[in-house]
Image (tube, rainbow, N blue to C red):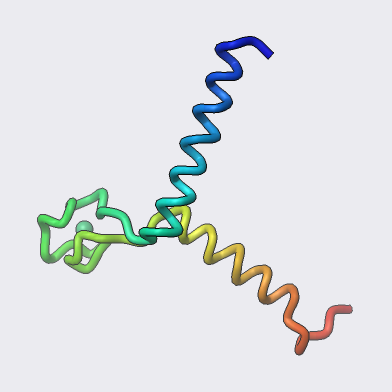
Length: 76
Ligand SMILES: [Zn+2]
């Protein structure tokens, strides 16, 4: 692997890790549409904060796992 490719890979991994950490520590991010300036914003209900996309993905996958491994449910 060449040096630029290695640097690019490391940068990507670092950015991914930083975003994962941000989603874990602060699941709410700023509202991209109004940035908290519009109290009538329908996207964030005027709070200026929204659930991060990565956190929504995590919730979806976690729920999918729970549904797939529910001991109460029988799988054919
Ligand atoms: Zn908003």
